[in-house]
Image (cartoon, rainbow, N blue to C red; front, side):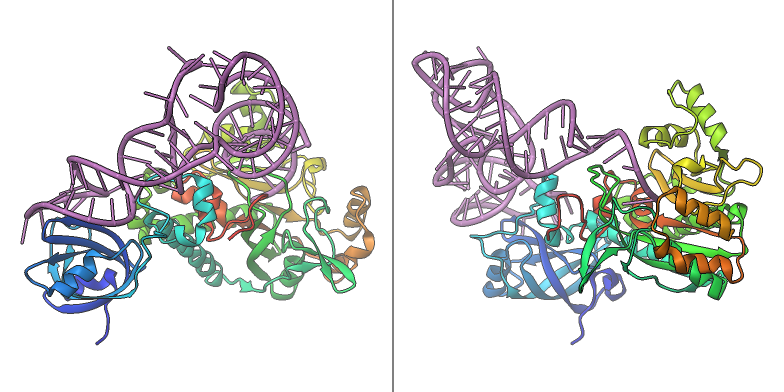
Length: 433
RNA sequence: UCCUGAGUAGCUCAAUGGUAGAGCAUUCGGCUGUUAACCGAAGGGUUGUAGGUUCGAGUCCUACCUCAGGAGCCA
């Protein structure tokens, strides 16, 4: 006999089916038992009546402990009081492994502290809240791929072992690479510039590593980033792409994951407002805006988290801040032709104070300009020989951006911490489980 | 690295310097429609570690350890 997944039980009303899963919770009321089963696709309540099953089945059910694995046979009944609309009139229960009562499942359906839960992340993933978040993450990643795949971009992945920094070495994880040193990538961007010159429009998607000693809800040491890169593109094109891309992702989640957003008690109203056009704020205007809000900020610096929050709170959708001073941005940024002290770059700040989810811009296309920048930033020129080649052999205006998947998922889910948006978070003091 | 806060039962938390407690979880008992069920009972403690003050320290002091989230840095 085939078994049925819990999310498909509604198609089997009136039939006797088998489900395979785990005991989520068990309530008892005299000669009635109400076990709740989960199978990864959903939850369903079973009803076991003492006078309708054998004493062995009743006792086997009564002795089930939380997260014991079971195969259950029962009749599917329509039940308006049940959250999923159906319940299972249990006829037979076959435990595969009963969790010992001496060492019960640690995550009871009550409150727990974050350290306790993160130490048990491998079990915490079974809870409905984590399910909702990670299903939305799945949907976001699928939308990312669908977007680029349907807009002429070629997926060309970039290496994780790299020979040198692309933005300095202080935040790189150093690893042994036989008799040499290597670093874990902190961005695929420089390689993207090579692939974009080969294929026109490309993107890479993979894990990224930053050895920043940050201890905030917005940082992980290992996170996933998608980075598109386009040949023959200026800053304007990069901003148009970022805007269209974010709208596509948010719309996808609103269409596909209403149930999960409900589990998270995420208000969808702010997400419904994520429509083009996004406000575009010149750096000068952003500084002025901060001044009007009474925040002390000197022109020329980079925005800190409180500054970003203040800026994004002035708008009801993501805001694109562009033309930061070159001095606070990476060496490869193309200068503004009319104001060379500014860089043709853009940060997209998510709404509701979630901060930067995208950073990008137009890359320096001049060979001489790039050589000068590498010198000014005291970077080892030999590491950039190949990168400079891209400016010797058919240099074109080009640009792109990087989006952190976890920051995007955290924002869309409306949750507090980045660490819940990735299956196994890595932070400054956590590399377990 | 700096700043702030927190470590008490398996978990979440109480406890004016004076007998270490509750809810949940676990076990036992009761209940035929429960929805984080409810009712009754039992077991469960080196109060993060090491010192110090005191007649007496979970509580006050010092150092250390661990964690949290904020700055800086960033996606």
